[in-house]
Image 1 (cartoon, rainbow, N blue to C red):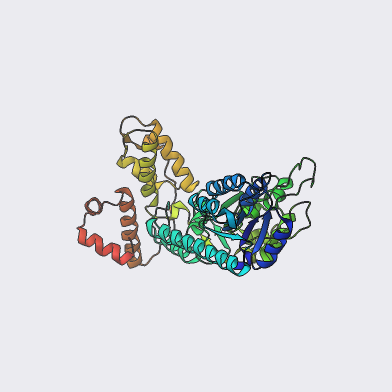
Image 2 (image 1 turned 60 degrees about the vertical axis):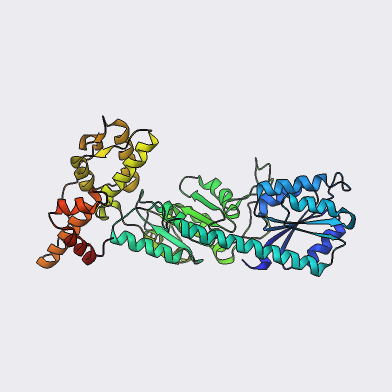
Length: 451
């Protein structure tokens, strides 16, 4: 973010001094407030990195009580915000007290613009370094794709794509069937990006009536329509500085597609009932289970909007195509739900693992999660059987190649993936079930690129 787009909050009750400070610090997006109440409102709205404030505020401008109370509120609401206190020559004791309460620095009035500018620039730089340090620590301490569990090579390649795309500013379109975890991937894009400390705002375009969706996205001004009793910001503004996730983008009404396209091109919005253009810095991630190209052909989706959204396309394979992942995830869900129910961890019996492995899972990971939660709750004792899982293997099979070497390689790879999922990563048990030695299993895993 450039200096010109960084909000600097100026808390000052003297209108003349407000204008002087706005002129002196015009390289920032200056926001002003004249009292404690309006200052808190601006902090909530703009989340400024730096605040300059006079200790003497209405209703008692000669008493530092109001200013010190504001300082404590800012520290509570936004502890990372750097507050620079402005005070008179005779109020040095009050300034030191403010620093003790958490103020970043203080300057005496009348101030020299060059000195205060240098102090503000340094405060922004310190805030920036702290944010960068937190981001690096988070990347070191947390798994790169926390919450995503897979051994499938196609799924792993998809995860590598997300890791490469996340640090950029590219708009991402996530494609996949319902229940595959599209929002999980969208959150991973946000968590691995420089925007991770800002908001992740999600909205489901299919879940909100068309007449309300525009207000939800863009916000509205007071009096814009009947019942609009106050100004309300939309999801796009809420996500300013962060990530906006538009789920089921294929269901976005055609009437709103043009307005979304303008925002993506200009990066400005207008609230419903408003005339002011509001700049917003937000990264957009979209998701859908539909074919947007088919919707374009049917005239239900704008082609120019599609190309704006599809700068990077991430496709999530369905669970039935992720060899071994169903049983791998089943183990993880049993462990999680056993803990949530306050019971010792239950065990999946071989017949249950076979049923899980052979079922097609039309509802994907979401369906598997629900089935395993029910099985943990309803099963008797400490084991989960096929009857507890209660799913039926799908009939029919996929077409197979005729080349014998390819058939053998595919069969070996398929067997290794399925067994690794069933044994929950225990290589000794996997080798035993496959009837091979551990070194042979290592060779097969290396040959097939499995980890």
